[in-house]
Length: 259
Image 1: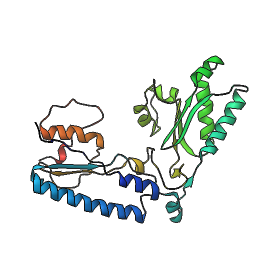
Image 2: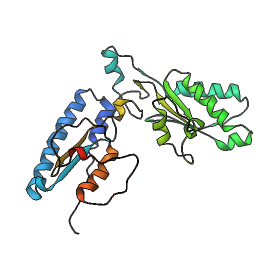
Image 3: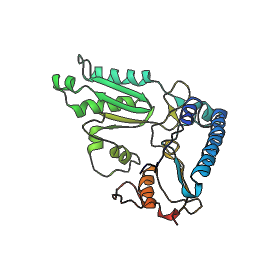
Image 4: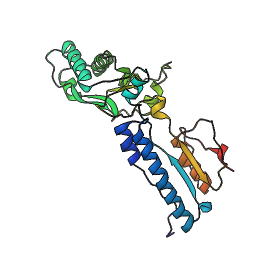
């Protein structure tokens, strides 16, 4: 039809302020108060023109954030800032020692927001090296800095053997062999690689835990302790709106909150 059925808004200022000042700052408190005022205006407009009784509102976030290192230190919590230079130095020294005379093995090293290493496969082939050996050397070198909790090679992520590692399955879920890095890393808890402010990109609770709020017709008011995630929003919306939806392995219907 001619009318809008689903309308999405991203309030990006919260992300910007959070990155710059951290989740415990006065600045993020100020931003959330201002966001509350904006939402009030939005809901009043909807109520006047459509009716909140005829509207379903869903709010969530795409990630959390590492607490500010300095804020954690002030509370007596161990936290530190790492640098790309530390990681790059350890990596290149280890590769130079293991493969003397071979230059250009590192194609791209990203250490902020995402933590990954791409090797130059052409250089590996030209020098008749074994990719898995180079990956293992690189992973051990970067982990030796003491800045990383895990460093997974492609062999680690392509393997299916059971592991008591609490993180590896999440990394396997996001690994796609044709495009994914040779080594994927995760910093130790409360280690940040930004010069100031903070970032995200780990599997720790402070990065993964986000709010999920449903408000409107067909929703039972309350707080629900059952595990859920943003991936559950789309199928639940489809259920509420009466659409057919394919069953997926990584999501579920949030039936406990539906009337």
